[in-house]
Image: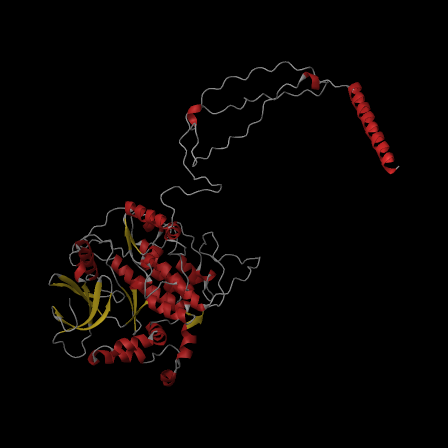
Length: 552
């Protein structure tokens, strides 16, 4: 077990930053380094996972991919090492927080960042993604890198305003130590492209789709995919219905709508073909707004500044002093008067950088997929929704401290995914039995019906008496009489879970009318009327006699 004060290669562990379920993260310093040398972050695999070769290969894959990428918007990896059969990764240290942590801090205060800042952050992530997608091997050929896990948890924001993409642990690339088989699903479920959730062959466009979800959630402070169960979430991920962010949040321009929706097209052939094209769309939507790193740095200082100060003070003074300064100093924004920057209040910065969240829930998005143009305004006013507190809005975003199960990275192939869904059904008390339909019978799939036996020709009806003269008309052909299905097409004794299909209604054949009910002439009707009149008169007379006797 490594701890503060130990050495790993050329580095000394000076502080423990955090510890997760798979690895511990330390702050390290190169030994005998000159003053002013920036510290590094060192990720060390837990001892309990050192014998798990599958996890070790994934760890090595992260190093093999990340060490080749040299881009300001991707976390820089310096080296991969091993000591006492424990692998460690030395990488760039970023003093700041994840995008997920910033979103949660904003939601707690009932705020969301201005749309142009959110789009600028997404454009930086897109630049880093494109650098990874274009990475080549020793022979100059593309490695076809796909991140597969773009999410707010894997975007780091520094106190200097830098935006960094990290965690290529499950990235797909040629030359990986661990190969991913066809049909395998990896990534956070809510940020998967439809083709990724179905286990189809992937390309770089799944990362574009995931990044479009990230910027959509930044703009609206709401979940892009919501569901009451994992099964419902997976179903919606496979068949999404994207809507423009402006339909869920105010102050979003049509240009931003179009840029975001260009990455959310369900058909990947119509989606933005690369992260570079998506980046261009995003930058064009906020052209001339003057957004830059200083806006991100001020967001972190105002909303997570206390956490950054606490982290800086916990580090050795030689390292923490510089980090503390970057966490507390006010950054000048375009348009600020130079002599007033130091006196700017946090309240003023909050109004400049963020927008207040609505206190009422916004209407649910329409079910149809929205095109790249703004739809016509509703003619029928939507009734006001139920009130919703700003604190509740934070529940719609990922739990950035204790990540929910559905926010963990998923890795499941087709058969494994089926077992995963079967387990969920068992937990819900459904089991593997077919779901029931209304009426109490389970929905069962009936076998294909066998060829029905030839039906005998209907017997010829006896001749009917000639009707009175009428306009000539062709008599309708008599349909075949209804006949019970052949005995071998249905079970002899229906089981409780079997629902007998309803027969198709057919017209009944015309049966000959009985002889005694036909040919009633005028004399017959007159006789019936006379009999009814006599009976009614007799009954009335009898009632009158009874009434007179009762009175007397």
